[in-house]
Structure formats: C-alpha cells, structure tokens
Amino acid sequence: MDTIIENELVRELANTHGRSRESLMPILQDLVVHNRFLSKQDMIDVARELDISAADVYGTATFYSFLDTEVRGKYVIRICKTISCAMKGKNEILGTIEEILKVKLGETTPDRKFSLLEANCIGWCHKAPAMLINDTPYTELTPRKVTEILREYIKN
Image (tube, rainbow, N blue to C red; front, side, top):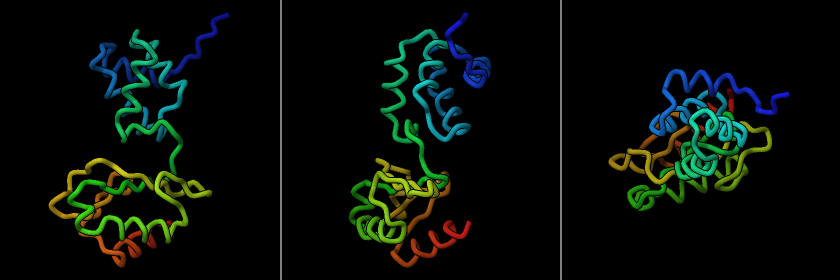
C-alpha cells in the first residue's frame, strides 16, 4: 500500500507552474490563496512534487510573512511596521484595533474572524500609517477611520 498522501492541488499547481526550484514560490502562493495557509502536509507534498527538501520548502514558507503557516482568521489584518508608519501613528492604530477586536498582535479572534499581524512593508509608506485587510489596503489611518473600517468587517 502506498503511504504517500496524494495532494491533487499540489500536483495541479506543479503542472501549471512547473517542477523546478523557481516554481516553489508561485506554488506556495497559490496554496495560500486556495487554503488560506500552508499546512505541514502541503509543504511536504510540495517538496516531494518538486524533488527538493522539506526543509527548503519550510524555510521559504516561514521566511515570507505573507505565506502563512498557521490557520488565520477570515480577515487577516496586517499592520505596516516601517519607520514611516511608526512616525505617523502606527502604535495608536494598533492599540485601537487591539481594543476593538480584543486580541493582541499575532493573535486570532476566538471566532476565527480576524487575525492581527505586522508586516515589514506593504508599499504604502507615502500614505502612512497603512494596513491591509486581506488584499485591500487602507491608508492615512486614524483611530476613527480604523474604527469605521472594522465596523464594516464586523457586520459581515
């Protein structure tokens, strides 16, 4: 009996992106889009499919903050932690979010609706402070603006 778990999605992504080392990132990105995180089994299956070490896949996955290796909430809030955002009030924004959602940085709400994370840069330094909720950027944040934004997500 074959003990290797068949992962059709990994096989399909390898068929689409190829089986070279250069295919690793697009495959991991697509797995996150599909599953919302990378499971240990996904990483093992990718390693097998690309014939590279599981340690190499894991090292790549854990290096990039947008390749989640833990289950996250339906809405992943990523606060930019660059000096630009810090100087423009990022800590006040973070405190407001923590107060509203009753979670600390790095945590997920008990109902798995929200996860609160930091990101090294989200590319909106010119409109700091900034955050992403999933793939949607929000810029020039104030505590009031963040409260209004979160109210809309809480309703959904």
